[in-house]
Image (cartoon, rainbow, N blue to C red; front, top):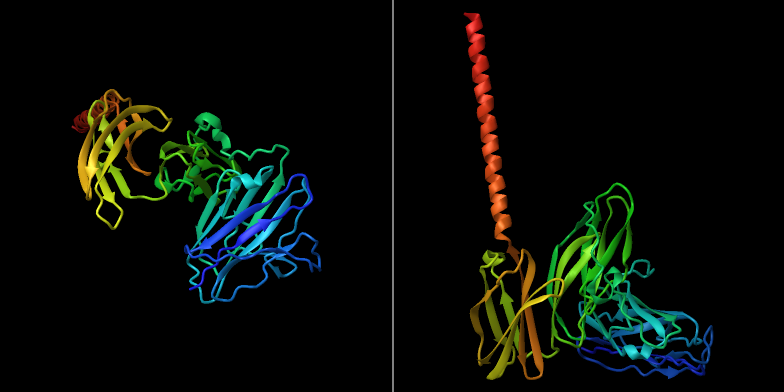
Length: 430
């Protein structure tokens, strides 16, 4: 079955700052290029800089087009200091399986001088509600599993005086990972409290969080982060909610070139989501997993942490490689408390238990991370656990015991009072 990759070339001719940006789309890893040409016979609203696809693809293909006066895949040039919105439509041929991954790739440097974004509207032809937004200046790819015959996008370009790519919007979290925390709003309910997932370097992943305003009045709910600025873009730092309204807040994660385990906290309405992103290499020869069993998720202060490590060769051929295993224990503020390394030979799937001494870690939330380093690649994994302060546990137990004793004494006193009152009533009757 034929799959089409469209090469969008946005031309600016005759201006001191030329925009010459290429965006490629690919379906199911099979590609075929469109050729874009300047149209000399442009008319009906077109100018000398319009471009179009010479031949419309047949119904066995998938294609991306812009809509200008009903023509296929044509884009207008525009002056240096003007903004521009390009409406794009992804169309699936009748004999193509519509449930395929659509992948966009581009070079962020091409958008130097512009604040550029790619917006996905799903099957909303009116483009009234955005599903996701990708920052073309800081990211270089976008992938979505298509479930529609037609999917609607726009490219929005806003001219900037500065000639450097715009920095990703990280919301209230700010640089250095600080300042994202605000007081938790008890009238804001989140669908999850923890995130832990794998992300390939150079790829983008969108995760939706259902957020409900439990209050009976409208309010603006803040979205921010701490210590995740390298992997997270917060598109909207404040979102308006009506009374009792539920909305999906989409978090845009992107895999940096540097592999590793990135941990921090997303705050929505001040409510924390403990977030761990395991960034790994594009081509994996090995997969790695480190898991804290449910029975060990809560560890008493001073005890050891028990984990299960699994190493899985991914290739079809026999593998015999020395790999380095880096173990890291850190918190969600970026503080590292333990680093251990070992080198082992991997020639088949291996699984073993690994214990860590936690020393005097104070009560709080932590994660144990694994980096499997081999020639030309890194696989990562992590698991969350909590340390409980024994003194706090003891104090809680004492309070429970004391409270139980008080309740028992209160019941005994009531029983004694009732008994005394009963005796007095019987004495008076006599």
